[in-house]
Amino acid sequence: MTSPVVSIIDSDQPEKWQQMLSDLITDPKELLQILGLNATDYPGDPDMLRQFPMKVPRPFAARMEAGNWRDPLLLQVLPSSLEAVQVEGLVADPLQEAAANPVPGLLHKYAGRVLLTAVPHCAVHCRYCFRRHFDYAGNAPNRSEWVKAIDYIAADPGITEVILSGGDPLAASDRHLRWLIDRINDIEHVSSLRLHTRLPIVLPQRVTPGLAALLGGSRAKPVLVVHCNHAQELDLQVASALGQLTDNRIILLNQAVLLRDVNDNLPALVALSKRLFQLHVLPYYLHLPDRVAGTAHFQVSAATGRELISGMQAQLPGYLVPTLVQEQPGASAKTRLA
Ligand SMILES: *Cc1c(COP(=O)(O)O)cnc(C)c1O
Ligand code: SF4
Image (tube, rainbow, N blue to C red; front, side, top):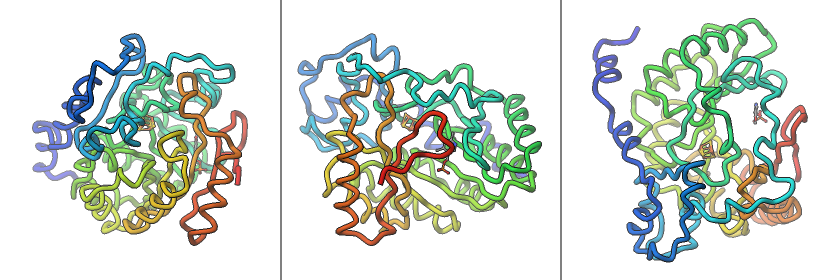
């Protein structure tokens, strides 16, 4: 049962993180100004901003180094005119997910697992995102569509894990999440509940005691996969957010994307694994960027990826070396490259 106090807070008074979510930096010039960079040196492209607007939470911007155009956090979020470059082989829907989309908001590509694009927006727009062309409007489930997704899962006893993804599932209010998690927990054959989220990294204020308790209380074993690409993203506020989650016995993993000029060097990857470990997070996947249009300048080759993994193996215990993967359309799992 929901206590009346909680429901009043949920429905009437935006929480601090919700206020911060409505006060994102969306103007590249403002971000550059905050960083002491000269905005007149920035080749803006209004067309590209219309297609995939800039979104940066202020606590994430606060971790960027002032005066540094090549800051690894800035490079992930600042729209670049290079996004307009057309390259053969980079397409809008590289994963051909449309084919695995039996009901709106649900992807059933791999045995035993379904992925719900539960919430159609993110707190941050990562310029390399494989969903930058995703049809969120057609996959923006309201409650009645969530019910269809729940019915689909309930009807297939082979589904043992539900993955809440997005967008970002933690962009939903606790009240919405509680509703969805309760429905999922009613389905006996679902034994684990996974969330793929970047919010604890880019807006750690999202992790409140209420959220940590809600996730930790799930009957289906809760696993939270954060998305962090660089050790510089992990400041004390993030550490405290992740600490609340581990205090609630939630298993924490990280997936990163291997991005040119952001983290495609051995010291950066080793530092990331070590810092994650200190925060009780184990590295899970290191993804090669999906071959999505507009991301040519982020692409790293599989050969470079393999070399970096060998380098990590030479320096780290096996459990701190992520699995290098790439998503290939039609494959029955993510493809392991190393
Ligand atoms: C990545 C992904 C999963 C989960 O795969 P794991 O290898 O179990 O992490 C499930 N469904 C879809 C559509 C995915 O893209
Ligand atoms: S948080 Fe994830 S889904 Fe959202 S823009 Fe970044 S990479 Fe894409």
